[in-house]
Image (cartoon, rainbow, N blue to C red):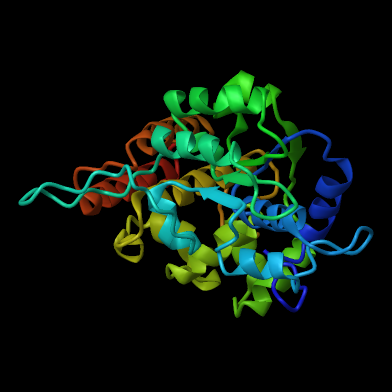
Length: 340
């Protein structure tokens, strides 16, 4: 969201926000694109712009009016944000869930839900049907929208079809194909692309990231993911050395990484090995860090195995053993002569 200084939370959001404000016609917008580029930040900024008290023709959101300040304080009476419990802490936006069941005495602590629950969606529908406290109507933000299960999505469907009054909805998603077709058809789509690499690299450098261009490439051009990787301990030097480390079967540098992160890194290495082996440039690793292999069959087989591993990444039986197994399998795939 825009602060009191009027600055956008991410510098590349400006064009997207202008497009959303200029082209928005319906009561529901679906903001979609690759993850790690700012859908969440854009959704909040668009909601703030819709609720802004600035005069007609003025830049919105202004960041200084009473409505903008209420959004900044996360206390605007006409803004409701729906997030899975698991994302509320990381995104710094706590959402009350009166329907959440507390764990029974003596039971294990309940893990935060990764879904947007049907009770929360029903509460949002009721919220949208009430009279707004201010003049700009009601706004509901759902992020990420693909975290709604089938029951939650169906609870929202009728309201999207026949919204109450001036209520407007912003759905944010990095996997719009996972949404019900009937949800997508009732929203005006705003597709986002990867930000300009020069702009994204400059932003990362401003966040204190060394060799930002290397880390940005490692994250597939997604600057927010790149920054998260750095905060989790990845740096450009380690990333450049990773192909050689994996080829030696050394799992130690990856110890402590989330399994999903390890699988993702190995998938990117697999992609770049295949690319270099057929004469193309690597996408994720620096030039020279990846060595071509004489045959692609073992690498293709490894790629299929990594796809299967990705499906188990959220629930490994033993993360340490799984990381060792993944690196051991990678070493075999990268051994010289495997394609012969």
